[in-house]
Amino acid sequence: MVEELLTAVVAAGVGALVYMGAAARVVKQYERGLVFRFGRLREEIRPPGFTVIVPVIDRLRKVNMQIVTLPVPAQEGITRDNVTVRVDAVVYFKVVDPASAVVAVEDYRFAVSQMAQTSLRSIIGKSDLDDLLSNREMLNQGLELMIDSPAVGWGVQIDRVEIKDVSLPETMKRSMARQAEADRERRARVINADAELQASHKLAEAAEVMSEQPAALQLRLLHTVVAVAAEKNSTLVLPFPVELLRFLERAAPPPAAATAREEPAPAGPASEGPGPAGVDTAAQPAAVDAPRTDEAAALDRTAEERALGAAEPTPLPDESPP
Image 1 (cartoon, rainbow, N blue to C red):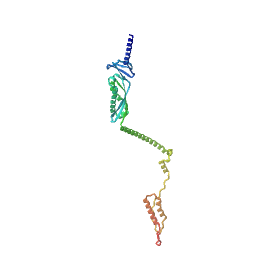
Image 2 (spheres, rainbow, N blue to C red):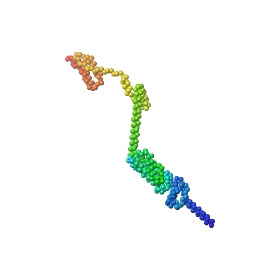
Image 3 (tube, helix red, strand yellow):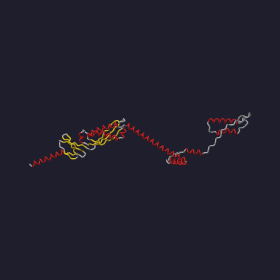
């Protein structure tokens, strides 16, 4: 009798242990448990910790309540200004209603992913290229609203949506690079022009000061020579101001006035010898009017030959010509 009683107690204990092993469940801190009894969802949501269900009758479904990071595949589309781009994004969401996430939608992760892709293509078609590149905050907010509207009925809350990268065609990249280069060149030219304007004002003020003190120009010349000589060059270029040349011209004595050119005297009789005045007047123009043209020089030589020929004595009849 005792043995039968002990056997019954042991069998009951083993059955209880088997039942507890089949009925016992543990729900983690970041999870919530949903119990389906004969396929019907029970209203009670099991909190984290140890819980017990009826074996074979109940079925426990655990739902993750953490924030899920869902990458959105790159979507290719045409922007409002007719530029083909590829945009990828990332969605952060979490489950706020476990019952709706399990009952209202078959797979809430897949549903959120498809909605994110559709919304991203819609945002690309409604936006300009400049907005995609520089005004992403506004696009992120619009994309978040578009995904969050249907996700509310699924028990899912969209926490954040971020556009990660915008891929452009190579031709568009080169065009944008040329545009940026042209803009930088324009700004560089404007800055150089402004610098030249300011330098011209300062040079004008310096010229006024140097005009009052001529010695300042010489000091500036010496400073320039020192600056050039400091480069250790084999050739020294010495700038010579034009104002100094003009000063030397004004300081030089005026040149002597050129004597007027006289005409050659007519030839005298054969018995008379060549007068000194005739010879001097014939030879004077060649010395005075040296800087002449070729034609004037030829005329002078002809006149001089005639004067010399007239001045020579005529040979006597009994004498032979020289």
